[in-house]
Structure formats: structure tokens, C-alpha cells
Figure (cartoon, rainbow, N blue to C red):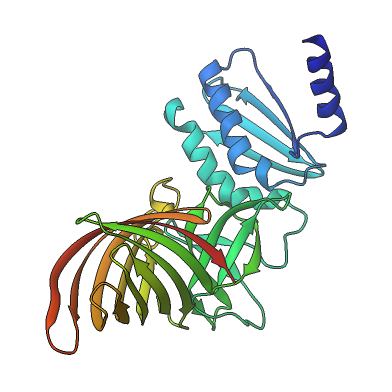
Length: 324
């Protein structure tokens, strides 16, 4: 046991955790609840954005009248001071919101392409000689190059030189975080199960159109009932963060998905060709490369002589997506 602990201690010394150092001190009269809330806010909203070799100094004390708490921050030669107002139970949330914007003043420089504004429902990024279009996607990185989330360009404000971005997955994002361009085309392998307990396996290629949130979709698939098919159509993926707060853990990973597809295939059990048109609307939760969705839709299928199927369906799907 002692040997294991010694080895663990040695590993921690040789390979320190990649995190900026937070040096936090406070008056003895400050309640522990306030201290813990302020420390959590600093770790959430600032430490992840700081260079790992930097040191963030924080001092929490009462003002000269003993009525309010004052938080003094220093990073290198830069300083920032806050007065914590209102109910103590709300300090953490309000401080995280304030540091998202004001914390930028502690940085000597920012990445060439980074999050520069936040509206509550989305982010903005200032660009020069804009080469980007609606539907382009970026991975958002912290100061140590770790992926924190994915955003998509929902609108290009060319006159202002700003990309309007919506988060589609990941952790809370903060201003100053770097944007790294990633492919916007994707290939997904999905497994679906409908209300009749019939499963299908699909390989789907999505090619976004320069008009968010629409895309062209191509697919190849097979069902457990010995049908193989190919499909083509239009799809749309609207992040719920565009409609609500991007700071909500649930909302920032949810999207409304819709598609209208035409399919043609071969039914091996009947030894005949068939044709199918499908419209679908669903709610999707994205977790990194994995996604889970529940959708409803309407399907019409026929062969050369008769109508094979017509009506509503309910479908549960899980998919693994690779970005190209």
C-alpha cells in the first residue's frame, strides 16, 4: 500500500495536473458557504481559460464598512476587483456570469480566433477577411488545448465581421476560449428500433448547405426484415441553445432534428423493388460523438403494383458520428 501511494505521489510530481494555479485567501470572518461558492466560480469561469503556467491570485474580504464582500483578482500585472452584492446564495452564479465577460481584462492576449461575445443564447467571434459560412463548425478549446464543446455558425454578420455561433454539445463555454476549425461534413452509423420492434442499421453522410441549419443527406441501410435501400433528401438540425440559454446543461446538448427523405431498395423476402418517402421530426441529445434521439414521422412505401405501407411511426435511434 505504501509503495502504491509513493508511486502515485511520484507520478503527480513528475506529471502535474494541467491546470493554472489558484492562490485563494480570505478573511476568517467570511462564511464558509461564501468562500466555497466564490472558489467554485473562479475554477469554472477563469482557471480553465488561464495558461497552465500562470497563477491567479484571489483575495476575498469584507469592505471597510463590513457590509459587503470584495473580491480582488490578480493575474501577472493585471488586476480586477468585484463587489459581491445581493443574497449570498446567488454569489456563485452571478460571479460566473460576470467573470465570463470581465475576466477577459486579465488576459494579455487572446487567440486569433476565439469567443468574443455572449448573448445568452449564443456566442460571437470577431473575424477578419471572413472565409466562413453558415453551417461551419468549430471545436472550442480551453487554455491547455482541451476540447470543451462544439459550436456551429448559425449566421454570418459580414458588415460587423462577426460569426454568430450556437453550441451543439459540450461543457459550459467562456469568452476568450480558442476556436479550432473542424470539418462540417459527417458520416454516422446509426441503429434504430421502431414501435414494431423492427431494427435497422444505416450509414448516413450529411453535407451541410450554406444556409443553417439545412443539409443534404445520403444514406445506405438495411432492416432486420431483409430490406436493403439507399436514400437521399434534406435534413435540418436546430440546436435548442438558439431558442434558450446556452448555459443550461441540458439545453446545450439538445437539438430538434427533421428530415424529408426518398428511398429506393430491394426487399429480399418478397424479391421485389420498393420505393419509400419519409418525413421525420425528432429530439436528439448529443454526447461527444454519440447521440440518442426519439422521433416520430410518416412513411409511405410502395412497389410497382401496390401500396405496401402508409402511416405514422415512432423510432428510437442511437448513432456514432465521425466528422470529415
